[in-house]
Structures are given as C-alpha cells and as structure tokens.
Image (cartoon, rainbow, N blue to C red):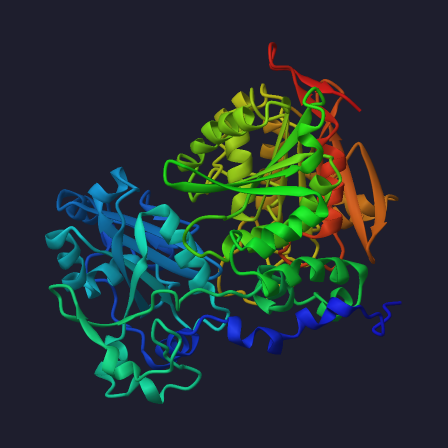
Length: 597
C-alpha cells in the first residue's frame, strides 16, 4: 500500500506554482508560434531516387534517430559555401544547426545566434531538407556574412514541455554560439499581424528586469532583415530538471504513478536536491559554495580549452595525501550555456555528492555534446590529478544519464585503460549500430576484449518502455514516434549485441521468452535471462537486479530496473551504482580489471 499521507518539509518544491517565475520568459511566445503556424503539406520536390515516406527510410542518407534524410549533395552545397549543417533530435523535437564552418575551429570566438521555431511534419523523412529550402534566404545570409549562426527547432505541435531550452543548452556547447547574443525570429508573429504584447503568458523584460513593450524591441537581424527579438538571458529555464522529468508525462509511459513518487522516501530525497535548484542560480554564488563547505565538500570551478568543469572533493582529502581517493566522472552539463546548469547537475546527482561529502570519492563534473569533444576529459583528469595527487588513477569511474549515459560508455570504450567501470542510466539494455555508441558485430567483437564492467539502471516506467525485454514494448504515450528497440525482435538482437560486446555467452529467443515464467521476480520483470538476480527494496520501491556472467566467470554486466520510475536517475539508483563501481580497479600496468571487493 502506498501512503499518500507521507509528507516532508521539502515537498513544497514539487509544487509547480513554486517555479512559475523560474520558467523561461519566452515560453508563452514559443507556444504561440507552435499553435498558430501551419504545416506545409506539399511533398519535397526533389526526393532521392523518387522515394518518399517509408521507402525513403531505406536510403543510406536516412537517420533513424532524427527521422531525417540529409541529402549529401545539399549538405555538400552548403559546406562548399562555408556553412556547417547538423541535424539532431531531443525530447520529441528536432533541430538543425547552420553555422559558419570556420567557427568550429575556434571555440574561443563566439558569434551571435538566431533561434527559429518552425512548424513542419517531422514524420516526413524530408522534413530537414524542406526546412532548409523554406529558409533559403536565412541560410544564404549565414553563408555570405560568416558571422552568424541559426538554430532551427522543428516540431509539428507546440512545445508545451519547454524542450527547446534543453536543445539550446546543447546547441551552445556543440557550436560556439554567443550566449550573450541570442535572438529569436518573430516573423511568424509579425506576418500574422499580431502584436507580441498581446500574446498570452508572454511578458518581456529589459536587461534590468523591467517590463517593457516587446513590439518596440523588434529589430532587423542581419542582411536578411529578419524580424527578431533579443532573448539573451530570457530563453533559459531556472527550474528543476528532476522536478520536470519526474512530474511531466513526456518522460514516462502510461503505467507511471507520480503520486507514488511524491509520497515516498525517493520523492523526499529527490526534493533535497530540487531545493538546491530553487535556492541557487550559480555555482559561483558564495552561499552555494558555503552550502557544500558545510557538508564537508570543496566545490571548485575550473576551465580547460574554453570549457567548464567542476570538481567536488572531500575536505579531508588533503589531511592524509597518502590515502588514495577514487573518482566518479559525472557526465552531466555544467557548461556556459546556462549558469543554472551546474546547480542542476549537483541536484541531479545529489546522492553522489553525498557520497563525496562522506569521504567515499571525488567527483569530476563535465560533458560536451559529442564523443570527439568529450576527449577533453582526458586532459581534465590529468589536471585534476595535478591539483589532488591523492586521486586514485586505478579507480576512475564514469557515469551519465540518458544521452550522457551513451557518452559515458563511449568514453569508457575509447579509454579502457583509464576507466575502471561505468554506470549508465536510462539507456536501453540492448545495443544497436546507431546513435552515440554505434555497435556493429565487428566492433562488438573488438570491445569484448576490453573487460569493461557496466551497470545500466533504468526506470520501469520510462517513456521508452524498455522492460520487460521479452516482448514488444507497450504503454507508450504516443505511438507516433518510433522508439528504439520497441519490438521483441529488435530487443533480442540488441541484447545479443550487448552480450557479445561485454564478453558474455549468447542467449536464445526461447530463453528470453521463457523469462516470463521464471521463478525469479527480477528475471520476469526485466525479461532478461541472467546468472543471478535479486529484488531490493529501497526508498519505497523495488529494484530488479539481473547480473550476467562473462566467459571468465565474472559478473561484470548488470541490468537494473526500478519500479514505477520515469526517465530520471534516483538516489537509490546512484547508491546501487556505487556499490557496483567500487568493486573494481584497473591495473595501470597491465590494463586488467582487479576485483577489490
């Protein structure tokens, strides 16, 4: 039975009314554009080989993650004119980058960015090519002037979940846009003959915070003379990532019960972290630093090659420099795009910070938005070691949630000599030859020689409905968008690839299907055959743990599903991951894994 009377002082931070003033001030304007602009129903005039719809998805230039055909000739046309094209997706929205190629060579030089919200049929594989064609004049401006960039955020419905904020946070890391010069295309409003001041839920303030007339602030952007509004320091959310993901339907399937989380020990512990995001806006705030100092943690801000990273160290670390400290590299955004991001990171992984406060480990906090850029972490680890020589280079772990979980695994597989174990959160159990960590049969065979211990922790009610794996996925809130590995056939194939990559014996479809009738509850719930399993009860919910033995007889692959959890990491998951990670060390001379517990 769930006791809905369970209460705690911090529960107030779950109340959405507490966060009204923290929401992106341009949210109302973004929703208006999404609700009042129409989709161009005409087909793309130049389909590759005449293929449309599902047939176009068989093209080599089609990408499943973005549901987009990126025609090589068109991409090459813009590259020849000095414009870099990138197509990406996040949270059900899709977006394009068009920026000068030269700016990617110098992240120290920032250039202004125009944000364009475009309504289009994103189920059409040619949506990206249609968007480029629609904004030919805009893109021509980027090519000719070479001093501006454009982010096109595309959807077929209003963005009611403020995903555009997450997209822009990612964009300003992926390319060197100037966060102090961010502008929004308002031509859709102007063309409709509507005044910005009349748009519901939209109030415009000047740089001093005073309410002002937005229509008087419209200016012409660039040589294309695009009606634009300055949204610098206005596009960001200063809300709580955990609160949003745990309470919004976007991040869960139809079986999720938010009230159970709200009135639980999990909800109470999450609220401790959420309170940080309410109280603080910057990690340089003296009160924020004092907060951690009071807990026994030195929180430090650092920068390497124009990219920020954070370091959290137990204050006792320097008392006995001969006592080695393990490190968790947390791949979560702490970059310049939004000052609040680093506070969010500390909230999101609050339980890791609590471990640090108790002297269990150090924390390095850093991530960028592609595997190549994340190579900077190698230098960051070296710098951290110079600052704190007691850092144990044999016990460096890495962890991340969602796409950052993929980046964590990608980094570990690039540097198996450096990383002793990995914790990924919210990632599918199976692997596939796509996305951030593409895994082909050939690569899986190569990776199998790395011996990389991995624990993957997932909510049982995530929007991707990853568990159980012994059947097709069910309970999706929207069948409109294809979820990765939603069919049993895909799941079986993905799981086989995971087993191969982590040096574990293969299974059969029959064994996978038979998990439905297993005597072990964890096996039934995850739908995965395992060599040992257990059910834990932590903070009000069950956690289903299945471990697979590799060819050497070691339990270095672990899958965890947490009852009634959406796409969000939890304190219990973080504690469980630490119990896994701390078992391992990497021999610095031989590269072999040492089991130390």
